[in-house]
Structures are given as structure tokens and as C-alpha cells.
Length: 294
Image (tube, rainbow, N blue to C red):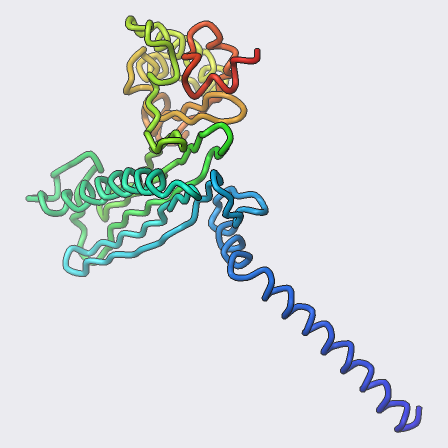
């Protein structure tokens, strides 16, 4: 091939390369920072759909804010990945939800720090377990979240706060799941009682949850099921069913470590179909959107 032909080929490749780079630059300019934000959120495990950057009134997005705190004297590190909710057009609702989330996370951090402040010896305990006692090792608190369900037309937002804490003299870390369910039309936290009829003063819905959960957990754990532990952890009380999520598939219940099974099995979760509550749900409550048309 002649030098002239080689130069022409190089010129052609250069033009094509420049065109590709130019096209990519235009795409990134039009996509803006939201495209990068979406990628970061996807990597964090937050379940979002394409188009999340829409700012139409009534839309809701959940972003991530991270922070790290280290205390060298007490030898602990706290890392937090918290949700920041934006309900476009309703700033007061966003503020109300975010204040509630911040309050919940602040309480968990305060409890963790109190374990160190109140420690008098290596045998002291708190709701977090054993206090740190081993020298030159670091205790940690890690708080993360997942968006379990988000549906603006249904006014429902379900968020899971997942906590892992480890103390330097512990055999293993501890894990706890906390549910945060919100009505995004007003920013109110949804309680378990809000899902069922106000006439259930005798907590008949708790009896239903107890019966259904006991059977579902026994089936799920199979030969590993400890009937007595499951029975104790599913007694008809608000505390036993405090971790719940409203989802498109049914009412998801989470039972934290030791509640219905040994630590080895970790937290247990089951999903109960809404049809099981067709005779006890609150027709004006959050489950109505799933059951009123059945």
C-alpha cells in the first residue's frame, strides 16, 4: 500500500473516532448528572427504575446519602448509607419523611455509642450485645437501606433499614432489619394497625398473622424448624410483627435473628398474600388498593 493510501486510511479512522467521541459527549451532556446518579444508585442496591430523574409533581425518588464517623479513642467506626426521599411538588411531605428517617437512624447510632459510654467492664451488655473489650480491635456499626416497594399512584413507600453491628469481643456480628412504611400523600408512617379494620379491637388480625406465619415459617425451614421457637416468635403481639413491608406481591414479614430460628439461619422473611386478609383489611387503608377490586 502506498504512503498516500495509508495516510488516507489514517485520516478516515481519525474522522470516525472523532465522530464517535463527539456523539458520546453530546449524549452525556443531554443525559446530565442524573445518568451518573442512577448508575451509582444501582450499584448501591437501591431498586430504581429508568426515568427516576423525572421531576413531575407527585413523583417520588429515593437517593442515597453516605457518612462515616470514627472515634479513635473508643476504637469504633460508624458507616451510614441513608435514604433521602424527594416527593416532587410536596416538599413538606419529603421533609416529614426524611425527618422520621433521620430520627430512626440517629436513635440507632445513639444506642451504639451508649454501649461504649456506659461500659464499666468487659461483661457489660446492651441491646447491641457485648461491649467491646479486646484491645487494638475495631467495633463497627454499618447501616444501609433498600427500597422494598415504591408506588406513587398508590401513595406507598416501603424502606428497609439494615443494621450490622460488631463488637470487638463478640463471636460474630449482629444484624437487625427495621421497616419504614410511609403514606407519601401526607408523609405519615404506616403502622401495622393501619392496615386492618378499626373494629379489630381484640387484635383478631394478630391472631391471623400468627397462624399464617407459624405455618409459613415451618414450611420454609422444613426439618430445621424449631417448633417451640417459631411458636414463641409468632405469638399474636405487635412486637412480633413490627417488621413488615407493603409490597406488590403481598404483606412481607421479617423476623430478626433469634426470633424464630437460630442465629445460623439469619433473619427470616415470608410474604403473605393479601387475599388472606380480605375480611379484615381496612377499606380506607393502604391495603385497599390491592383488595378493593378483588
